[in-house]
Amino acid sequence: MSTFATRTRSLNACLAGSPPRRGWTGVLAQWSRKPLVAAAICVAASTFGTAQAQDADPSVRVQTEFAPGVVTAIPAAPDPKETFDGPLTLKSIIESHPEIAWQSDKHPDGEPHFDPRSRTLEEMAKQVILRREIFCFEFSFKPLRQMYLDIPRPDGRMQRKLVHYMVYRVRYRGGDLRPAVDDPKNPIYQRIESVSYSSRRFFPMLVLKDHESDRNYVDQILPVARDRIAIREQITAPLHNSVDISTVKIPRTSDDLAPGVWGVATWVDVEPGLDFFSIDVFGLTNAFEQDGEGDDAPYRRKALTLNFYRPGDGMDQTEDRVRFGVPAYSDPEEQKYMLDQYGLEQRLDYTWTFR
Image 1: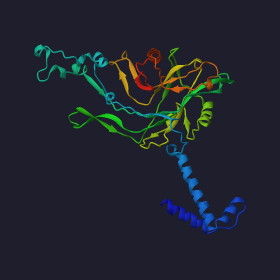
Image 2 (image 1 turned 90 degrees about the horizontal axis):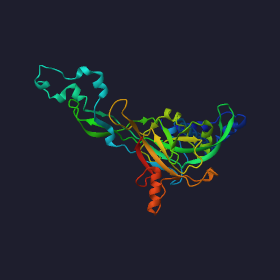
Image 3 (image 1 turned 90 degrees about the vertical axis):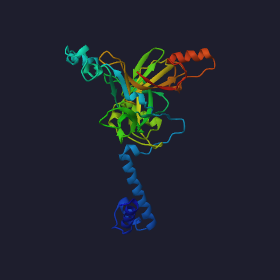
Image 4 (image 1 turned 30 degrees about the vertical axis):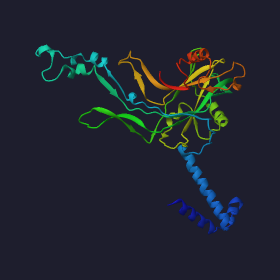
């Protein structure tokens, strides 16, 4: 049944009248006999029902619109080169199964009769290409800020601490990449195709890195801070921490005004003299790098690195404004010094790196 037909039936029911009742119910019943008032009541009731339906689905919840520049959006950046690794040598397979080595005195020069030596199991295990499907989320964030909060200690007492926090939004745009095969009988991967799903999940980890002290701070779960931060930052949608956001399905959307899913990362006990620092956001993509194969081969995950600068000192930290990006200087020496703090060769507000 259409929305118009539903409202028409509700209006007719209101105009039909009902026995007088006491209180507000009786007043509404009496007013419903007047056509204009009845129409207003029924439309309001229908609007209230629509609002309840929106509240049930976080993906369509109406949110506060922020002024341009308040929320910084970083687009998804999947790379076709990340859909494969290799050729690699599977040392674990070769060492665990020495019987696959070609050893035969009945064949001339130790070669098979009808196939080249590269077709033996041992040689094929030395030239393996691993292929996979990759995805990437869009990441948006509000300026990083600080506030004092009473944090519970292990003994149950409260301790006032300075909390650094960053509110962010994640949206799934689709456009996942995967290797494609034109002929299933001849598995040759000559192209990359784009695929999309109805939703995906986000398993984040946000690490704040102080470049001066070379210390890393992993975001902590602070239930007492979430409501306070949501009110201060005017987030009307559910605000998730880094754990419970993984339980929310992030729907695919192509709308630039889609609300997305909001989260917050919090850090405590950060160095008071923090000036040059970055935040690594893990979990936005499943892309990774690995040098070789085996337990000793280093494994690196792709992360979004956001660079920040806080001009100030350890006094009145909540009054200091944290700026996004690497500061710019006209003096080449000063600019080089600033880039060295972040380990960069050129000014970049954010980078995708493997860590």
